[in-house]
Length: 213
Image (cartoon, rainbow, N blue to C red; front, side, top):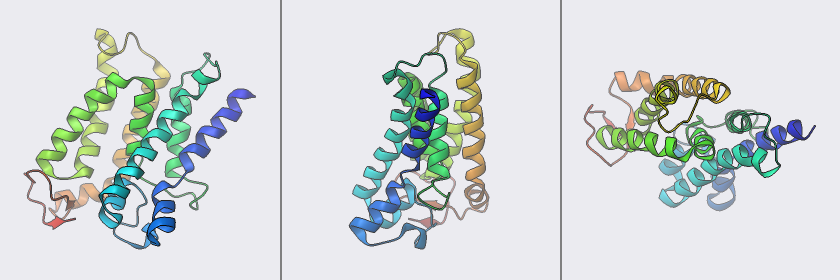
């Protein structure tokens, strides 16, 4: 019963639509009506600015982290904490407070990995920020990082690097979330191929996309 209740708590934590609420209460804007219509970090940066975007990113990240450490806080050791993190990501993308819609799962998934293995998220952050600098695209960096996470979660435990051994539930969840993130970015991938993806005024834009944020 405790496990079921904590899974529900994890889902509700993930469901907190930080971008939507911050836009509504502090800027009197509904993010769903601007830009991409997404309530996640990138659209918040685009519509509400750097400070709001940073706050939304931090909240969405910590939702995943807090959900992942819930079983540790309550002494549950019979199931991988990654399952609780998964429920937070599902809450984030299918929020009960936002008509079961939400963000693209990148920040909250990063929070789950942070709560499970901080060294792994640091490694992925290198790939994310390097690719973001080279391409000026959060979408490209997100898809690349998801792909790298899927590969590394299969390879690294075999060599006892970062992971002492395989946690197959964690591995399965990361593979699922990597595919989920890539699917959620399918429109971005199409725009990248057409060189019409939105970019930030940061980095090298080596793929020569045409739309600045």
